[in-house]
Length: 218
Image 1 (cartoon, rainbow, N blue to C red):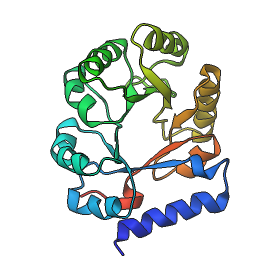
Image 2 (cartoon, rainbow, N blue to C red):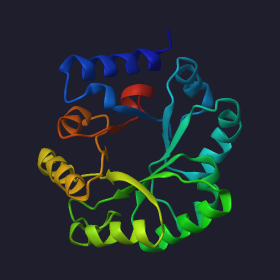
Image 3 (tube, helix red, strand yellow):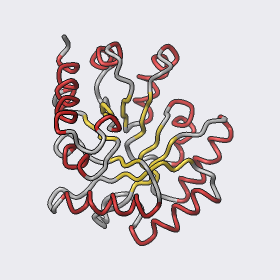
Image 4 (cartoon, rainbow, N blue to C red):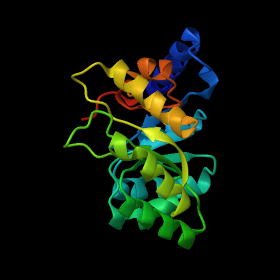
């Protein structure tokens, strides 16, 4: 059996054995950025459907043909998304995790109408209020969400964060859960290879795991 399949099975077993919340509602996004398709296909052939990419051009090259032949695959845009790349993202991807500006919201809305598609979208929250990170400020989140829904008619399903590493991550995850509940959203995208179990404890429904599945990137 391929190592990535074994790794994924072990992660699944860890989540289910802890029986945190409703384990069946946790979706594991295999973050396949930088890995070639020969490393990814074993997981696809084993039935895994959620994959994450953060570079648009790389994703288009890797996934365009594969998605035409494997219709159940779900591709997640998890990286910073520039407005000039949205036209390539909408036809290929199923989820966007990094909506962080109204300019981007408008562009997504325009391209979705052109493609007759309605992606599932997460608003990225700057939970640690870090200047160097993207994401919507907590104080602006409520208004941002309302505009995305009413003006741009986006299918906002949840919130996403990349918390600061140097402070108590559980506090950030807890804050994200409170924000999600306040907006009545059902999905949370948080938790990576190092902290996904903590994220799940605070209600994460999508965890983004790369190195723990595929190994270290070279």
